[in-house]
Picture (cartoon, rainbow, N blue to C red):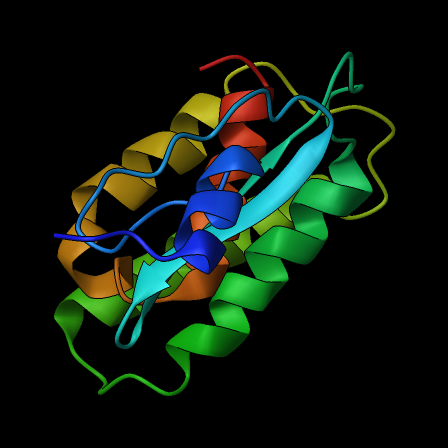
Length: 134
């Protein structure tokens, strides 16, 4: 197959050909998004970021709670709603995140993963929990 001058210049500038893998270099302190049809995964990679505080975690819990409203009502959703309400009450007006609370949230997200997997709010909450140490 012949390569045109334009294709060759693109390779020299770090371009790629269709069907060839794309190499992603250093992404520290960056955000990027990768996705196909109806699927997008956004990764925010920061350097020496402080862990989220109770207010940020509360916002993520409330966002997930609001996203759940769009799902059909059932026993699993009712149980998750109650768990999120309890966590929100623990975080409201808190100065710090109580020990054990992140593990409690992780367990809830794991238990009800089939219910929350399609929700972006669950992904955002999971990312905050990871930044809290796991």
